[in-house]
Image (tube, rainbow, N blue to C red; front, top):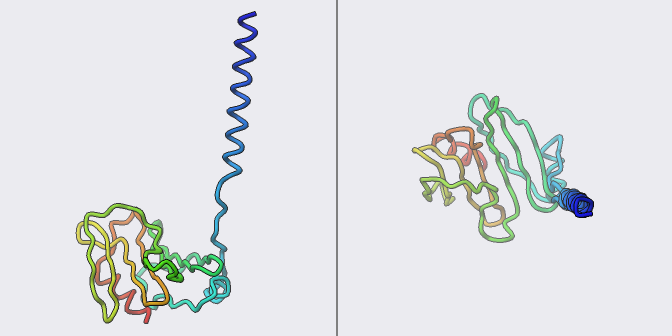
Length: 163
């Protein structure tokens, strides 16, 4: 009798674990990004004009364009496995960091380029993340973690080409 109770208890626990696993899988957050064919399509979704960089490092090509309704546009440039992500969004929260980059960096500096104050973060003299605002919009450029980062002048060239 004890064996039967133990087997039934084990079965109930296994079934309840499976049920809980399936429920948590259903509760995942949906992806807020909509894939777009063109920047114009992304602008319609986001509700603002996008000012993407004109200068992209050599070897990189525009690969993915995505938008979040009434909020943000993301453009991903690729060079093989390496990626640079440009984001432009409404600066409704006033913090200016829309990068989604939560990595810890050894170096963090604020620099001026023209009249823009840009926060750059990275390691070993290379920049992996740059964020700034122009009053109305927040911007970011992030080099993927697999890359060692970009030269500061490359990032500044990208930022200056947005104006």
